[in-house]
Amino acid sequence: MNHEVIDGIPVLWAPAPGPLEAALVFGCGARDETFRTLGVTHLVEHLAMSTLPRLHHDHNASVDLTVTEFTCSGRPEQVVEYLAGVCAALGDLPLDRIDQEAGVLAAEGGRAADPQTAELLSHRYGVQGLGLASYSGPGADRITVEAVRDAAARHFHAGNAVLVLTGPPPEGLRLPLPAGTRPDRSTAQPVLLDTPSWREEDVPGPGLALHGDVNDFALFLAVKVLVHRLRETARHRHGLSYDVSEGAALAGRSSGERVIGLDAREGQEQRVTELLWEEALRLAREGVTEEELAEEREGLREIWTDPRAVVHELSHAAAALLFGEEYQDVAARTAALAAVTPEQARQAVADALRTALLVVPCDVEAALVQPDGSPLPRHRCVAHTELPSDGQVFRPGLADRLRFSAARRARLVVTGTGVWAREPDGALHHVPFDEVVAVEVRGPGRVVFGRDTCFVPVLPDLFAGLGPAVRAIDAAVPAELVYHASALRPAD
Ligand SMILES: [Zn+2]
Image (tube, helix red, strand yellow):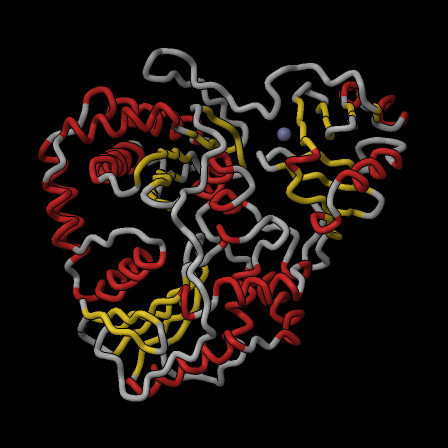
């Protein structure tokens, strides 16, 4: 791999077959946003791309949780022109196009992670950083021009960019980005939840999150073996599932999450959930064989040495550079994999299961036990069962209480420190005012979103006489966290 610097930007290149490929990688993604500004990175990307003339060579741009990439392939002069256009646009965004591009984003509806990974990251990290993955936020039409300017200035500059190329930098290549300082990535995002639990979400199948060192090759290989075993049992043996997926998310230097997700044939969600958990426990208990590790090493070697993977390998090195991680090349990774013993792989999963999070589709009852024989607890927003006695109490309207016996149990309580709600089934929710990440205004009502993924709807079709509750919320929450519900999507 060759290193150069052009206009203050590191350029990593290595030869590969085919037309010249380029990726301009920025060290920013959805994890750098807040609930209030969710989607702003994607909006910056769209605004920049909207300035380009019609191009006939391959080109694209994408935003995931951690990086934003502008990619293209073509003749060297096409690559030069594309990169110059992208850089010029990022330094001078067409802010008058925000409304149109917000509409495009709403139509695109892209997410930074698959559903299970997204939900598990939110459970683990709360509604901040990586945990924003499962949220769509206020909506693209609620992103302010100040937020766009701020995101562009903080992240889209020469200090936060690396260019990768599958050949030497072509004649005339310039990267005219504004100067800037690389964001500090020296500390990992702390987890909000490190005790094992399960919960229901709107997901197509179960998912399991294992927290740990994402550069730990023992855990990496063990998860590969687990995925293969699940594919064998859930798909090939029982025909319950089509796809077993695996993903990883980086929370900071080495620390992060490995996620395994399965989809499930309708009606088989419960069984697929049990299979996932039982196979993970069995691996932690009985371990893996040397043959299984050898199979996974061989599979990885095949992927890593494929000549078509050069641009991905370079992007991997670019991300390491941007996040202050040590880049390990294919030879180093292959050697690290070779050193992993079956006992290390078993131990890595056993360790990670102590903080495992499980997400299951709605209506699955996950009656599962942990390795020590105790039940895997269900996540509850509030551990105790009593509402506070020192607040203003709101109940459903009289007509609802007469018609629906369940409505008689529903309550909203507003105290000096936060909002509480009891659902008809007795489940409690609570958002302290100092943990509010956003308040959505829906006509005379409000929805209060908390940092730990709990939210409380303060809406007139649920509770009567809400005026004092709404006034208390508006007085307690900073104005910059309050927004009016998006006009781009139907209210739910
Ligand atoms: Zn809740």
